[in-house]
Length: 131
Image 1 (cartoon, helix red, strand yellow):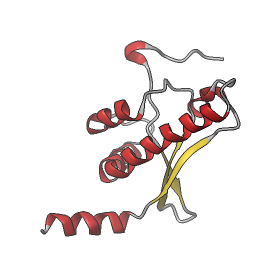
Image 2 (spheres, rainbow, N blue to C red):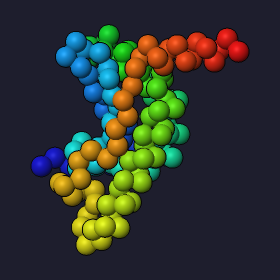
Image 3 (cartoon, rainbow, N blue to C red):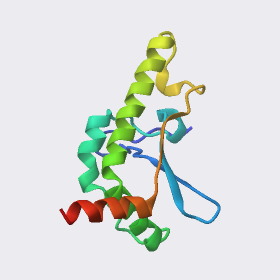
């Protein structure tokens, strides 16, 4: 098993994007630490990192990297709410199972989910900007 990078090399998993059969994003979800093997950061710490999130390298696909960056920007408020809900789910699980390592508990995989619509989000933002 590979060791998790620590310190300035530590990796934080933000969220996952659920897609439908046509390839459209339909949901955002957060997972427990063991699923992605990253360093766990509290929601407020990850939320503080969101404005600086960008994938600028061309590998494996520049277009995909740009799309992911745009999705994080477009849904930043929802991502913040999702991360806060993730922390609540983890805290509740830890309270329910105090003798378990909550971050390694294979019974807790998905911690929060939020359905999304790109077109609705753009319409909402456009309406707010026109005020």
